[in-house]
Length: 180
Ligand SMILES: [Zn+2]
Image (cartoon, rainbow, N blue to C red; front, side):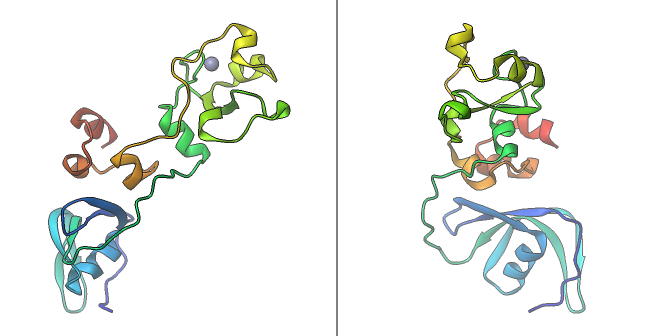
């Protein structure tokens, strides 16, 4: 294994041999894939990596030299951060900044901790809602909650994308610029 000194905690996007985005790995892992010939650099990040024997631009996007068959992952892990990211850090009820997770159909009444029953909520709405359903309060959800879908979610999860990856992940350029 090449001797690569640890660098800044940035990451690189990995494309399959067919240019289909696969996953995100650490820059260190991406560099090793390039140096061992398992991948080639597609676009460079900022800076140069130095090791005892090599100098290499920090990879931002790499492409695997050989096609790998990857089981299609449809499930996005349910986590607090992922719920906030899906809902844009906004309260589902009043659109204010969200700081809590609300179970739409309350857990105390058998509601599940699942993508279609959780929303980001502000503390005030969450508190006034208590163990009632939105219908009981005359509240409306703008859209029924659902598991996030799409290429970017599959590859990134709740990670903030590097703007250099936008083209590969079909991300709107403005959002990518905002994330920078
Ligand atoms: Zn609210």
